[in-house]
Amino acid sequence: MTAHPSPAPILSRPLAISDVSPDGTTVRVVATEAERRALARDIDIPSIESLEAELTVRPWARTGFRMTGRVRASVTQTCVVTLEPVAQVVDEPVDVKFVPPSEAAKYAAARDEDGEVVLDAEAEDPPDVFEGGTLDPGAVAEEYMVLGLDPYPRKPGVAFEPVAESRGGAEAPASPFAALAKLKRD
Image (tube, rainbow, N blue to C red; front, side, top):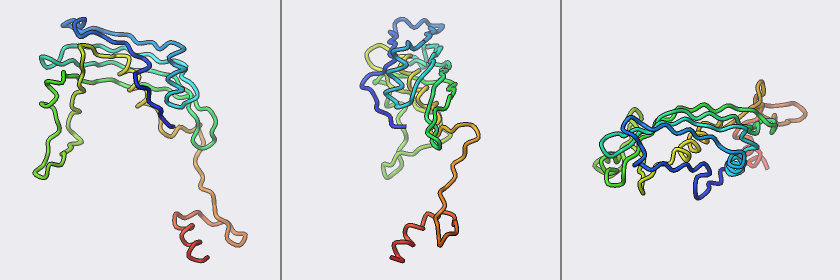
């Protein structure tokens, strides 16, 4: 799959932060046929039959927001073995936090004495930064749908079988070093 990212999200559904209620505001994102076609073309898959999300935005950490919910999609991808169409289902939970730029430094990754970023696989992801007084649940739905795609889709029951090299009429298993050995012999 070769992604050709658009400059702006295809599913953009801006939500003014002033419209987020203290108890949370739920946004339902349902992609239109034109949006599904455009997104499928953008991410280089044959089709997206359905794409919807239900996301709730709540205030978080005084000046931030937390968006939770679920993204579901039915898509057709191309089998990496047979190149035939494969129906896939995407069902991704969403839990992402947002802070204004003025708060971003509080959540920056720690650095060691050499200035290298220290990553902790067990640590919670830092919040995303939002600007301009809006959040975009549609863009989040689009991102999580794309992240939920199978990077190596295969038709059921299909397995990758390496091509065997021929040595004097007998089939031999392919080796990662076979090409180098052939060059050395030549």
